[in-house]
Amino acid sequence: MEKIDSHKVYVEPFHVDFTGRIFMGVLGNHLLNAAGNHSTRRGWGIGALNETQHTWVLSRLSIEMTEMPRNYENIEIRTWVESVMKLFTNRNFSILREDGTPMGYARSVWAMIDIDTRKPCDLLTLYDGDILRYVVSEEENVCPIEGHGRFRFNNAALVRTIQPQYSDIDINGHVNSIKYVEHILNLFPLQQFEKGIRRFEIAYKTEARMGDELSFYVQEGEHGEKDVEVKKADGSVVCQSRIIFFE
Image (tube, rainbow, N blue to C red; front, side, top):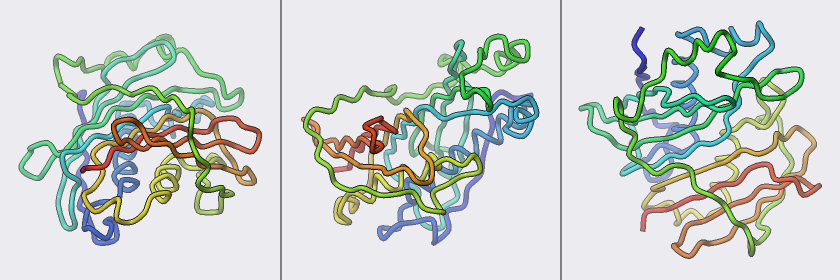
């Protein structure tokens, strides 16, 4: 079986924002769908893993675009596993126009956990290390964007506090990973998005559930990037994010 998968996407009118560009959350969902399809075809999908009380957890996602797909465009998302470590695996993506030229790339980090204990599993030994058969090295398929950055919060201001609602909660009973993307981007004024988003990063730290109070703190970096930290009422960090808008 090929190590790289292709996921076709048609950008429909309800997938785009007021500029005609695809919502970052919608693009993120398509990336996760591509990852899920890739894993499922190789016996590593959620359905198969649940039978042995395992599941995938997204740890980090970084998306960098030269331009966002627009209304009525056909695009292709290609995805592959770049590396596997004991507790994490790195998965990359390319987002291509219909003619095959790149519009952007994404990097992600995933962990596999035991559903009952919520503790990470050893990917190098689980199922006899079968996942290693699907690794595509950087030399074989390039993902030219930078890796995931580090976050340092020292003067972030509280912008909004919310409580998760019905549409935020996924099949696992937690706030869906892409819902954080939507809530984070909703912190910024409409005019901020006129030229679009060049890079979006998010690092997931702790799961949140219905009934948790989530506070969103924003600080501006020295190069104009917007950093966001989401915390529960007890002060624990749920996720951290960085947005770089086109100037």
